[in-house]
Image (tube, rainbow over all chains, first blue to last red; front, side, top):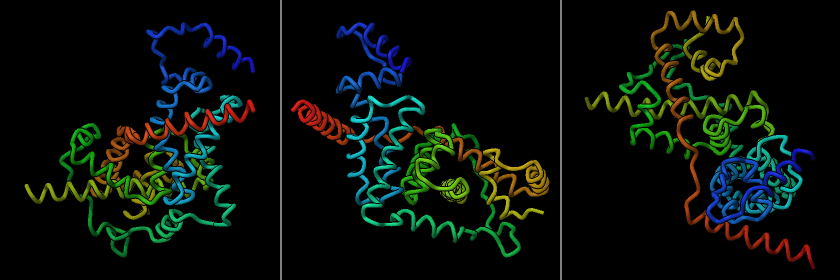
Length: 228
Length: 84
């Protein structure tokens, strides 16, 4: 309450001149401006959060109605924003709203699993072990990589595209987890709450996603070596 | 004794420091003896660090414009229904 009052005071004391540029990356500024229904704040929020919202929605309800869920969630965000208490980051709060909208939609339609879940669960039970022999040793060991640092890997347009493309092609839950965890650095506990999955399952799915990206890079590096 | 398959399966837990002390010891022992697994762990670390350095995808300009417009219209509707 006191915190909210202080932010309001800060917001009021800021000059409103057109030359004053607001820093929307400051979460408190963004919240104040969203409350004022500032179009630029809407733009910044959509630019920053829309993709993650889509990933979360897709992983719960599947691709077909994910966009609809995100639309509903945005409206809920604007409606509920005056009650936002800042107990979590704005992004986590928004993603929880998406998750709740998606789950309540599933309940309404009496569905247990989304399309993405089924694919992910199948992968959970059939871990790809084709690179190992029966005794558990490598039958197809990792290739030699010419590129050995993450910076060099990202600097290569081809490899960066391979990584991005592989992430895009992952099953919805894996895509959601690796994006939220490794790219957006949201804590695992928070991700489990947002997606309502157990920590052990989320760790397995994160590992599957990372392994697929490693495999894609390894395949490419192998080709490069053959060409050389 | 951990197998190479176990090392692969537990690699994310090792990198994220989620393994117990005993498990870490078993892991180290295997890595000491296995060149392929040492190579694999190094590559997994590189892969994860690379993913962490990629900026999250942003929606296309057209999609942003459309979404912002919808938001503006919806919030206008909210305002007008509130004061009716």
